[in-house]
Length: 117
Image (cartoon, rainbow, N blue to C red):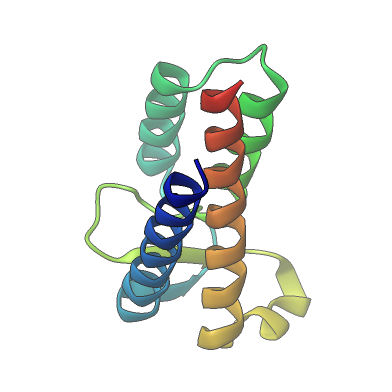
């Protein structure tokens, strides 16, 4: 049992490392709001794969909508910065990259907990 737990921890660490590199390489920061067709597409995908009733699904949905707020159909990891005059604080590539990594890792942990339960 300990061996299996250690193997899973190793796989999770590898996943997180890959996720971090993908985000850092493909992150594009944009000003303004994402296009309405991108928002509609994201809503359709989330409605298809996440439940509205489960608490875990709600948390995961919120993280994905707020953190990965760009057009999911693009190769880039888009982050739209639309918070007005204080938007200058969220233009640093490494800060946004870390925020996305942390949030997406949290969404993944939520999913794992739901699968184990």
